[in-house]
Amino acid sequence: MAYRVPFVDPGKNYRNIKDEIDAVYNEVMSKGDLIMRHQLAAFEQNFANFVGTKYAVGLNSGYHALLLSLIAGGISGGDEVIVPAHTFVATASAVVNAGGTPVLVDVGPDYNIDTGKIEEKITPNTKAIIPVHLNGRMARMDTIAHLADRYNLIVIEDACQSLGASFDGKNAGSVGLTGCWSFYPFKILGGYGDGGAITTNDPEVARKAALLRYNGEDRETGEYHYHGMTCLLDNLQAAFLDVKLRHMPRWIERRRAITEKYRDGLGGIEGLFLPHFEDKRYYDVYQNYVIRTDRRDELASYLEENGVEVLIHWRRPYYSYAELGFIERDFPETESISKQVLSLPMNVEIEDAQVEYVIKYVRRFFKK
Ligand SMILES: *Cc1c(COP(=O)(O)O)cnc(C)c1O
Image 1 (spheres, rainbow, N blue to C red):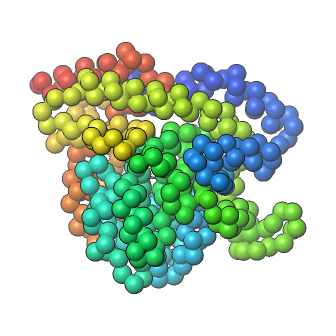
Image 2 (cartoon, rainbow, N blue to C red):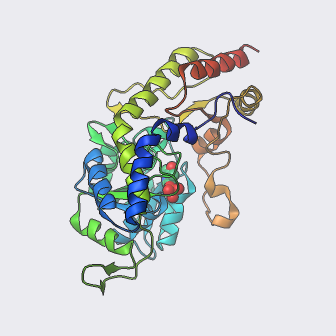
């Protein structure tokens, strides 16, 4: 079924910038610049500048950005790493696959890690914290940096959902030892397939990540330095991402303008909580526009029936899957979020009239 208001619209995004994308496609393809050529280096430099770090290392996914950050940060067998209970499973899986043990902490009403609950989870084995900046809003990095200092922990930011966000004047992905990014098609900066990056100010971490992503081999000398992997960002994807990065300031403005429309249109409905949290220190970029209500499932079906595509992140917390081996499952805020949240269509291609259509049907639902 074709939606009146699709959740995302990658085809329309491409059509809007087709000339620019096709030009770099033709150039890359006709020159045969496929692996680690100047387009990758140029994108890395531009991306680091955008985030505000010295280095960016292009990778094939956000998952690998997390995994390589943990390895480069020295995490190994038996090390405990603090992660939020409410996040995409990849945050915790990267810890397990690096040989560490994820230790979960519940989140607060803004969907980010509850910094008041971190300290009680710190043990002599704790080595790192991975705050996730979920839905386009940063975690409380001042408190996290303070705890990290006090207990000598490294901080790896899962910034996959927060390109352009800031807290207290500091950009997502520029505060921790590394910032981890995903260029999965539906992220704020999305490629035409998988992609990711690490940002860092640490030259050693940048060097190690750059070697690990390419079999541990220094391509200039031909020598091996680590047991590495194969998880480079494709040169063609880097060229596409570099084009899209130039549009980013305008696209982020557009996202925020859409959220203002949602806020004006949906404010004041009893039993409906909108993702606007009054604190001027935050600059949110709304990877997702998450609303919250006890009548979530009913509302989701009603919107779908009326041509509005909605998503639920996530119906069931990742730690509740027995196969993943988590023992602790007592995270009340995460449990209630799983039952109450719903994400409305949010993409830069959406027209004002479509936003108004969504608002009209949400209001209609709550009048029933
Ligand atoms: C998308 C995402 C990831 C993983 O990114 P991939 O590129 O799909 O591997 C990790 N953490 C969060 C919070 C994400 O949203």
